[in-house]
Image (cartoon, rainbow, N blue to C red; front, side):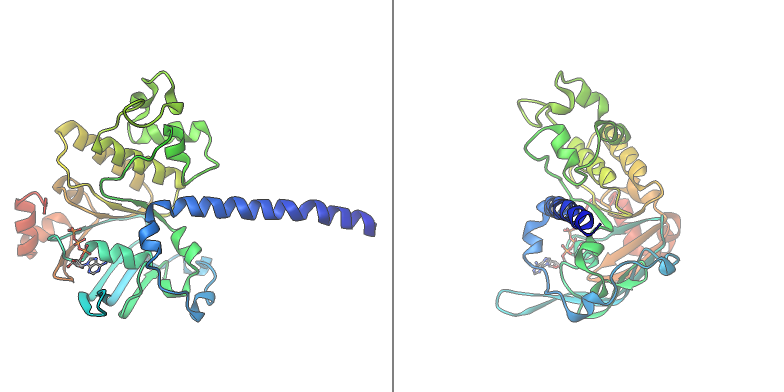
Length: 306
Ligand code: ATP
C-alpha cells in the first residue's frame, strides 16, 4: 500500500507543477499589455497576505468604492504632482458607471489606483469591500477585464488575439464572443476564418473594430468588473452603434466602469461621475446632472469629446 501511495504521489507531483506553470503563463499573457505599468508597481506590503481572497461574506459590498482618495505622482526629480483630492464614489455590483471630465482631470489615474498600479496617499480604494492593499495582486487583477483606448490588435491570428486572456477558450467560446461584438461575419468572411492573421495580409480591422475585438477578449476572460477607456477617435454612425451594442453586451450583468468620451455612452449609464481638477465634483444620471452640474451641461453640449 505504501509503495502504491508513493507511486500515486510521484504521478501527481509533476501534474501539479504543470498546472502551476500553465497558470503562470496565463497570468503573464494577461499582463502583456501592461508591461510599462507593471514596472511601476508598488512593492507588496506585509498587509498583502492579510486577505487572501474576496470572502463570500462580503458579497453584499459594493463592487468598487473610492473613499476620500488623494494621490500624487512622483516626478523623476522626486517632485510630487498632486492629481486626486478627496475622491469618493461607490459603484454597486452589476451597474455601469461612466467617468467624464476634461482631459487631465484624473480619470485614468482612478483606474490605475483601482488595479493598484500605484498606492493612494490618503483614503481607501476597495473592491468587493476589501481594501486593494489587502488583496494579493493576482486576486485583485483577476477581478478586472481592461479594454484600453485605441486597443491595438496583436500580431497573430484572430484566435490568438482572443484567447490571449483565456487560453482554455474553445472555438465555440471564441465565436460567441465575436458574435457579441458583431465581428463574427467580418471574420468568417475571410477564407481562413479564426486562423486568419490580423493585419494587411489577413483581416484588416478599423479602430472601432479593434476596440470591439478587445471587448470580445475581455468577455472571454469573464472578469467580474469591466474597465473600459473609450476611444476618442471619430466613428461613423454605424460603427458607433456597433460599439455601443458591444459595450451593452459586455456589461450585461457585469460591473462596468467606462471612461466615456461619447454622449451616447453616458445617457444610459446607471451613474455618471463628473471629474474636474482631480475631484469628483458631481454624480448622478444624465437628466439629473443636466440640471445640477454646469460642467456636465457644458460637456454634454460639446458631446463630451474632450
Ligand atoms: P485624459 O482624458 O486626457 O486621458 P485623464 O482625466 O484620464 O485625462 P489622467 O491621465 O489621470 O487624466 O492624468 C491626470 C493628471 O496626472 C494629468 O495632469 C497628467 O499630466 C498627470 N499624470 C498622469 N500620469 C502621470 C505620470 N505617470 N506621472 C506624472 N504625472 C502624470
